[in-house]
Amino acid sequence: MKKAALPAIILVLALVAYFYFAPKAIPPVHLESGLPSQFGTEALKKAGTYLIRNVSVIPMTKDTLLSNYHVLVENGRIKQLTPDLSTVDTAAHPLLIDGTGKFLIPGLNDLHVHINDDNNLLLFVANGVTTIRNMAGYPFHLSLREKIHRRQLLGPTLYTASPILEGSPNVWKFSRIVRTKQEARQAVIQFAKAGYDFIKIYHTLPQELYREILRVGDSLQIPVVGHIPFQVDLKEVLASSQYSLEHVDVSPISPHLPLVKRLELIGQSKKWMCPTLLVYKNMQKHPNDPSIPTNYERYVDKITRTFWQQRLHYYSRDHYSLQKKMAQLIHKHGGRFIAGTDCLNSYVLAGFSIHEELQELVSAGLPEYEALKACTVNAAIFLKNQSEVGTIEPHKQADLVLLEGNPLKDITNTKKINGVMLKGIWFSAAELNQMLAAVKKTYPHQNP
Image (spheres, rainbow, N blue to C red):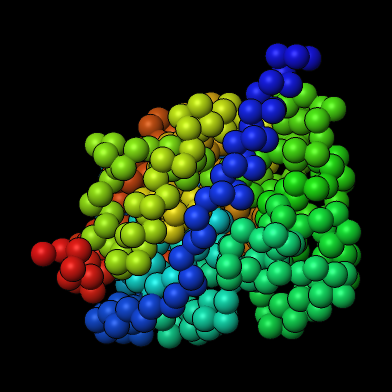
């Protein structure tokens, strides 16, 4: 018991120190990108009929590989998936895409992102991310979601949580502070009416306000997601209707439970867990660490770049290692994972970071297939959209990524993208590179 309790105490102290003494975040600035028209409505008119020939399909319906298959896409949907080319309906004269030696996976999902710039949307698409969940919402996110849905703006399918609900004292200046049950109730009602997909909560909420937010959220049928509140017992959280737990943290109000037992309970509860391991990794690095991907600075504005540099070296290496071990134990005990990166934090770049997060999950002990599940089929189930996306099957929406290598053998192969299909629109590797180049051009100060 003593050995198990010590890491728990260390963890609590580290979390409290970080969340209460870390500098405040940058404000939720919305930047208009002004990107060239080929990445706007013109690109969204390219949907047609495609035949991906002789490709190895990783359908994500189970841990399997379908070799030498042919995938016909028509009107934005997968029409056929077959090993017999002679049965493919070619009446519509599909555009041929050579899949020889390549691997086809469902579009990737990043279910913990922060967006402050339209450019982020292109970075996601260029990296094979076809669905995202924004985790601190504002009215401009609702506008982005609508423009993407109407095909007025190129980007991944966007779900957005509400502005963050916090108790007092709060962590972030831009959060919605609630001090009474009435204020909590009014906030949830307001955000639900505005059209947010989730209510986002933070660990600063006291127990009575946490309970009220869940009660009102349940009555309005809007899921509550976010941190485990520090003032609420872990067992209560796990028995509640809170839909997802963000970050690999445990409730400090459960000192009677050893850390290992708490992780076991989280796994057994089947609560959706979004570990966001990459952010712990990056924020334990020293500003002079040569492994910091400084080339990412070419894709962000000056405000974000400054914010990144300020938040380096906030976690210890031991803290990062502990997070990975915790994730491993939660998964061992049946935990259900969805992949999220917490992008906009230090050198966690939109789009690029999902591949690094997958590597972190595998490094934490998940098999490659389980890591892929976290950002494909699990994500679709979490979003209650598994009938549309998440696997490669006939009649599903054609959100697909064509890879040069097999990610079931080496998860780093998710970075080797040959092309992306977004809602039945095909973007070749050359077009994806043009997207990245266009984003860089909007930040000339970063790209002399």
